Length: 163
Image (cartoon, rainbow, N blue to C red):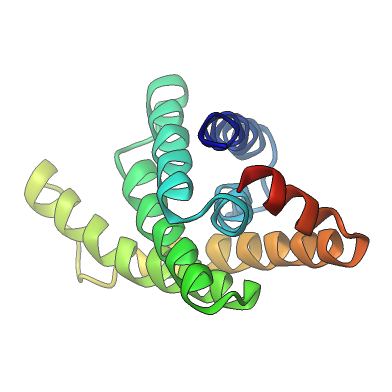
């Protein structure tokens, strides 16, 4: 079971990287959050965190994204997994992703960029309007895919397969 979760996590990381790199809407790149919600529901908080971390590292190394590529994803992915694990409600995975990424990661990113990199930003809430649209769009898209998988019976089979 653990090997299956590791392989699934690697797959979700690669899918997230590819989608985030090549598919975007004006000012919104939602597919990191899309994959975070799906991974959180299917594999749990640790593997969702790991997937987001791997995706962020790939985005930094291969596309030149700043460190916010990591910070902006890992907290939301972890909270999405925790919220789902505690409630067994897919919608709460979306809430965890939005709170974790849209608010908490945005605030953490401000402090990292200001004090770690010396970039002068106006407010601790600077990144919230930048992170929130992509986070909401991606999380809702992930939720819709999970609902479709649930209706078709695929979700239960995948959850059983991944343990």
